Length: 308
Image (cartoon, rainbow, N blue to C red; front, side, top):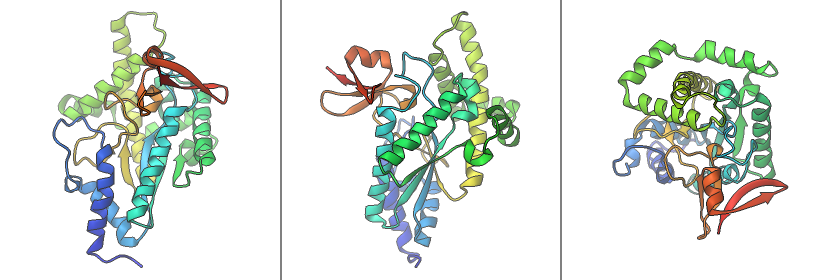
């Protein structure tokens, strides 16, 4: 039976309060109350009113960075393992105050822009398959993975990318105008450009030439990211939209921090997990983690560092 019209508002606020400590934003102001997030409250309330599990979509978990100075390899490791455990715990916390609970669909977007970030498609497939195995092996039944294979089946990767770009991507001219006039779009463009520069392990040209190339690729990454977001919205129209990118307070997407990290842009797939001496975990580039701790293997593969 649907809940009363009075209770969904208070339940929705309580659910959003569980997310707020993990809000990923570059906004320097104080933490905002749930009422400052009307998009999320409205979507959560729709599920609560129907007495249905709350569905979240989270684009991300694409593939590991191709730069070996940042990551331990091309497969998920402790950073991803901790992140999916966090998402499952968040769903469990929601279930305690709202019995229908919550579900998170990880929308793995590696194939959407693999050519632009210079990661082989076979590495992206291996990453997504291992991510599914980790979720299944840990019995994280509240989580699932959605990628281009769920939409376009066995078409080759280049054809899939072309289909998504042609159908959903904004025109580059419009995107350039937006970046020139919108502070949030400019911050995202600069953040992605920085990642592309940092992820380039081998470059024969000058630093300025690399930056020019990465600025151009950043437009393509944002185009494809927007396209992927529109495709997700088409396939999951009612879901509460999460983002691994920092988001302003009150934005349609809610930026969420998966793990402790030195800045708001760090993700498990651009870094390595380090277990601190106090038992907590943080994310940082592999070369920095190696200077602070010892490498730990799991199932014969490098997995994380422990502070010494």
